Amino acid sequence: MAAFDNGSHTRTHFSFLLALPVLLVAFAAHAQQAPEYVPGEIIVKLKGSSKTLKSQAFIGKAVSEKSMSLKGSWSGLNMHHFKLTSDAEMQQALNDLKNDPDVEYAEPNYILRSPGKAGGEQATSLAEARSAAGASSVVGAFAQTGAPIELSDAWNNLSGNGSAVIVAVIDTGVDYNHEIFRDSGAIWTNPGEIPGNGIDDDGNGFVDDVRGWNFVAGSNDPMDDDNHGTHVAGIVLGTTQDLLRYPMQPAKIRIMPLKFLDANGIGTTSDAVKCIYYAVNNGARVLNNSWGGGGYSKSLLDAVAFAYSRRVIFVAAAGNSSLNNDVSPTYPASYPVPGVISVAATTDVDSFASYSNYGATSVHMGSPGTSIWSSLPNQQYGRSSGTSMATPFVSGLAALMLRENSNLSAYQVKDLIFAGSEKIPSLENRTITKGRLNAYHSVLAAKSAVGSGEQPSYTAAARAPASEEEMAGGCGLVKALVDDASGPSGPHRNVAFFGLLLLLAAPILVAYSLRQKTGKSRRRYPRYQISSQVKLSVGGRELTGHVNSISLGGLQLATDSADPDSWLENGGVVTMVIKSPDGREEIQVGGKVVWSEEKKRYGVAFEGADSSVLNSIGRWTAGLLKAS
Ligand code: CA
Image 1 (cartoon, rainbow, N blue to C red):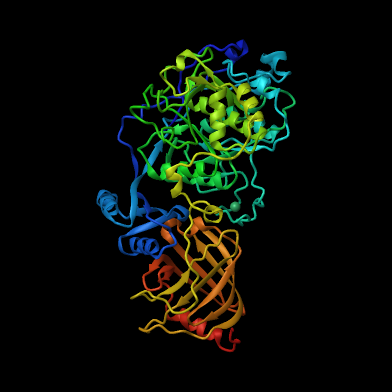
Image 2 (cartoon, protein in one colour):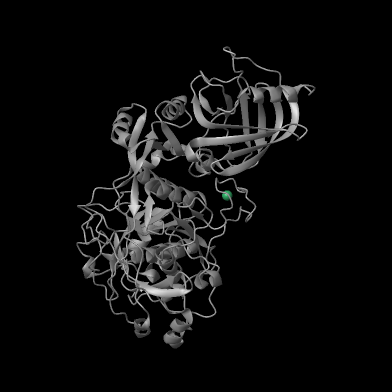
């Protein structure tokens, strides 16, 4: 996959802009190559609900019997991300999975590749830009393109009453410290998260995600280590207000930075899918997707359909390979989901950009993409060209329209953007609408439209989760049942077992039980009241819990931290440290998430639960009161 930039640029109507350096970004022809995938990684969607025993048994067997580690799950979709021990098994595993009656589909985890870092730009400062712009910026009329998209007329007709609409920029990250974002307050902040306390306060599966997420590093810092995402985000903001106006006006929108392309512009389908779920589940109403490529991915299609089912607008770049998308589709722009807007690039004078993909039946509209002025990391500015730059104008406009009329559905916004667009000759036979974006027309249309929130159904959306609760935690969830601390099931293991109960926005209740090493039959043990601390290390993170009852068969504990993604990272490796009631002793057991055929649920097999552990618990329980 590639971030869709193009090195070409044309003369602009704003003479001062000619003094600004041009951001040159190489682009790669990607559409005709066999799609790459991450070695050994497979995305599997199972039939039916993930709550069924059948589905849970499938996963358990895959992990425990087929040498596949589970890297993550989107349980609301019954979709799971596996890694094989060896890439050599890839084709065989895919074939086996496709023939499995429980499997709806199985596909490689495609690599999404950017063509490389932007190079050659010499950035300018905002002060220089303002000086060059002279008086024109004072009245709030500056636009980042010379094309006649009537931004300032749109700005002059805003009611100003709406709340800020969140636009997710799914890209290489955003330099959120850039002055245009900082001075306008444009970066989204998660209202449910307390910064830096190491706790997933809002229970959305991400710790300290105060301003989006970095899915490349698995961290809460979506800083841009390229240029692409910061440039794209600056266009989104610049569609909604004059970036040169001083003092900077308060932002009318919020930008949610989601990073899945790394510093080399490489990303994966699984991370793109995670970005989409994160964005939708955390309040974004517009998703900007200035990237594309890879093979047809059903998991990505499902994610796009999920966004539509939540009335979220999915704006996607048509691509920069001068190709006909009707013949050679570019994903995700070419997915036939009703909430998708596929955007081609036009120039300042409404000619068709030579690099832009087109498609009379698959590309919806045109938008200015050539020589677009915007922000670059480290308080700099420069210009760039590509459908990557055309796309965020549409995203920014959609956000303004939703701000004017928050009841509009994704489909209504899309319709009004199309209806408001201006027919231009260069888009005939190259796009469905033949229209180039016009902000003024579409904002007026949004203001007067009746926002019903309704939209046509889409069959793939039926595969999306039915309830709010089910997907509220985003990706990476594995749901299972709490164990009752009775004896476990692992057939031959010296095993400690606990069921995972990942309740969203609620304390995790975990129970696990230890099995007597030599006992062949299952036994129940008396349970005792206890007040003790337990620490769980999962996926490189540590959770603290409180033990309420304990027995030789196990313990029950509660923790207020819900970070479901972490449970299955690194192959589901888990470490548990249990403190004795007097706090003087600790036992540590390590294990791995497995499936119990007998108990029909997930658990963790603790290989380290040897006799010394059992002895310790036996001593601890002596003299304690029996629990009811
Ligand atoms: Ca969180």
